[in-house]
Image (tube, rainbow, N blue to C red):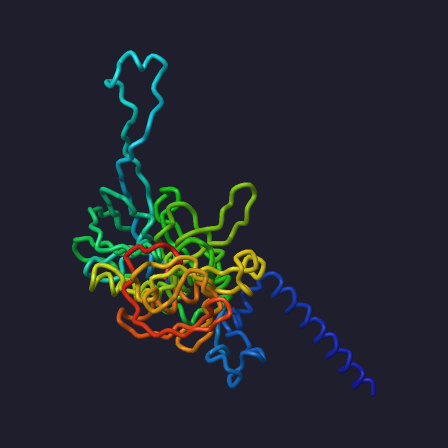
Length: 391
């Protein structure tokens, strides 16, 4: 009996001392535990587990760095420097009349600006914003590796604020193109450009929204909204995903003056960029369908003032001798459907018609006063750089 009690006390003390010693050792040198579990995949949540519609979500791993994505994409982002000659009126001094016509009333100066661009193929094709190079008399491009060269304009599309340039150099880095139609709100987004002339800079955020329109930035708007910082000089630069693929061309931010919002920037989706670039490289400009009229959304109150029964999409102007005019459409008509599908906004009508090839027959329905109409006619080619929101 005494022997059993002695053994029990001995084992108890040994266990306590062993646990205490182990605790002290781990506390003193925690690395002895190793890094088990540090790189373990995140456990799938019920909403993202296999079989719930989120393919591969169960094997996501926490990303510690986006350096690989930047290394893949950044070499293809270039700085763009432009120069244009600006003529300004000047105010003559009080004694100017003494000099008659010899006193100049204007002066000329060289205005310089900067932006960014993206090399999209090995032939030297660069995509940027149209407003970056608009009116430029000289365009200089600097690559991330320090090489510089003059660039030529291949074509411009003011309706989407895109332009295509060409440079002739040796081996060029090329930006891998991703897809914008698979983007989801919350996806990682990295902006690469040349803000304030500081040389190449990368900022990080997420995709805040998709399909943004009616911002007044371009005729055709389908912007990606992001909170990745976009500053002056970033225009025309790259918005990339976590794999280093181009998903958009950074274009604009909301006005920050007077304490305005921050973290709201917009990029043109890469799928739209692809289509515009393809047409510019083939034709020198973008070919779109056009009705020859200007639609505008009006409220019921505005319609009442104009003597119309209700609001909707109204024709506010129309090109005489256009197919729409010759078919019978007139200013003041309400437009209700195109090819049998309802028209809900002027922007929707503009975009749907722009996708059609010139010569395509369309059926436009609406009302002239209280009288319904339905006309069939062929669309024509939209004038290059046409007036915003005109069809």
